Image 1 (tube, rainbow, N blue to C red):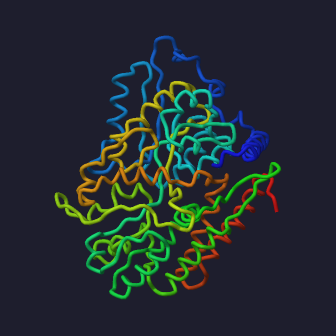
Image 2 (spheres, rainbow, N blue to C red; image 1 turned 180 degrees about the vertical axis):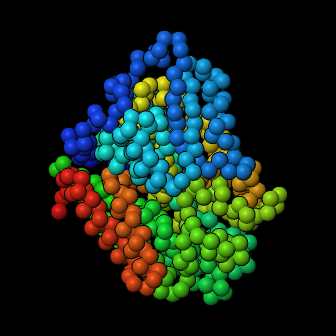
Length: 444
């Protein structure tokens, strides 16, 4: 979120409105949740305190299980024990469960949240302000630290980031005589050349429009949400969004991109068959996208490159990424944050989960990923993308509702019932409507 004074005032204002309208105290299972326990005090003498942590990391083959990382902490920290739960449902289902649990007074103390979910969860009174504790650990993390901040409140620590990058099959590109695009004009030309030969270097993903297209607008230099005179200013149809819409509209009109849903079988089949030989995606996809595509033990021919220049120089935007937040009612927030800081600095282990970690420090590309991407030091390239994230692009409370409208509009585009620019117009209209529903001031 942009660190402007005005935006902080607006964020503080919506937090105040939320407290007044929702009865924040009723959300807490204990008065202890409002203030961190004194440093060094477990809250029960020399007895151990127990903290619950809920996550939704994949824990897939070849990955260091989260439970194993936590076991190491527990062995070294007898007075702060952590019980970990993996949530296997959709992210939206986990958010609903957390809200229900907070209101019932039995929520996990720590929970993984996407950055887009943080403002909304805070506005609903579901997160603790742990600014004092968080600031102790700020220097351990990259610029993503600000993604866990809502106005003057800091609700946890960042875990990973999701800058957009470009994935491509180097061997297939060479066969077609095309180079890796460095700008949108080159991307359009390469996409058309590939399509003429029955290959595709792009997929327009209607189920991912929320983050994929907003992140591309960010890469083009847009900032969707700012503040002026203590009001939210919404502009999702600026120059960047217009450039992105025009690019995709031309590509789709020319039949030079696939239109498969990212999480559908058709997408996987297109990768497996060699029909899809390149695509824009989030950095975290590197950890698993070629599983089942590149046989185990064999070296793949795919590579990762920085996102092409969308007209604002070498810049990218955020597609996902998450942090670990302290839920309202956490009885021992200081101890929770101590674990939070430690856990999110286990960079080598978290990298095996496919994460582009937010903690500072070099990360070695996992052997599996390095093999799949033809020996490339993938995480070094992803780190470059991290450094070029648009620093002023953030989200509003209620962005999930905005995303739903964007995905709906993207589905209409694929069905031939709308234009790409309609997606950004839908984001504008829904952003304003959502903020007003939350009784937040919006500049017209």
